[in-house]
Image 1: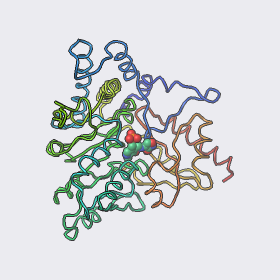
Image 2 (image 1 turned 180 degrees about the vertical axis):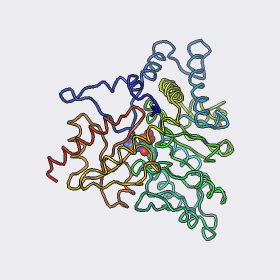
Image 3 (image 1 turned 135 degrees about the vertical axis):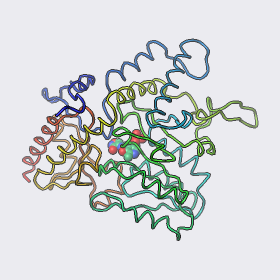
Image 4 (image 1 turned 90 degrees about the vertical axis):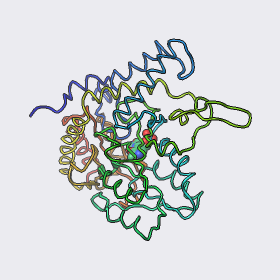
Length: 416
Ligand code: 7TS
């Protein structure tokens, strides 16, 4: 069969994948849901900015500052195209997904949430999509409601109908959910959920931290009102996040970070804020890394997001099959690979996930163990932690085989 993407060629672009650890074992990096590795192009573009045109943006008229401003704004346009937003003003740069969600909770939330209102989340949310809403609700006398996940890691859409039905009486003001769970791996039907919500005029925030890096995103097609994601989970640098907000909503929102660059005029008693989107980007932003993100998007565009998804689907099917073959293993989330993004969380009887990850480290294998910042879900699953292997464009079946050999070795050590 024709390869979907040339994984061995791709690997040559990632210098870290040549790293040897623990007596020469090669690094098998399977923690891509936490952060992905960076190709040379991204590293070089950051270095080029510092070596050739380091300067502040949106203010000076000299050449290198104009070059920096142009590259920064080009990235915004690239992101607009990448997620198919209508206008570049709808793209706001933040530090990460967490800050993007906080921006919405503070800015939109503090104006729109009143006593007695409800905010609908799901049980599988990352802490960054729980804590800002919970805090907002505590301050406003509102309540957070959770859509439940079933034993196989799916949501029931009837539950959503129930939560926002007639008896809700217009109390639900926003639904905020992740399009792909960072623990279960489930890809949720965002478009259908948004359609149900919009029938009741309820806006929807999609946490795209796990979905945007791994599949095609189209905000016009899904109809989401807000979308949050992080550059570092899609080949880009750390310290850059994106918040997309539909323009009609963004125009009504108050700025979150106040100070320089987000103003037009400041007087002793009043301030006139800048145009969109600058009024939401107070202070000197992370210029170098935004420019680095541009190179990451070019890289993904060249591969094609459909090919990214196809490759991960093939790898996830293999990963699922191989983990299923282990003795006394519990796998969380959907049984079918096609309902998942590229990650599998699991527990092996009698081995704590932290011990498991430590033994894997001896083999050069990097996986995540712990609660994955999803303690509400951990409570639901009645566990405190799990192991998680997560994939990206440069992972191979051979690496999955090394993971499985290491897991079998862990079993032998623990005699289970
Ligand atoms: N939402 C989801 C669904 C996530 O998986 C994460 C990070 C975030 C939000 C927060 O992203 P950040 O860039 O603001 O930190 N998830 C993980 C993870 O699964 N392991 O480490 C970070």
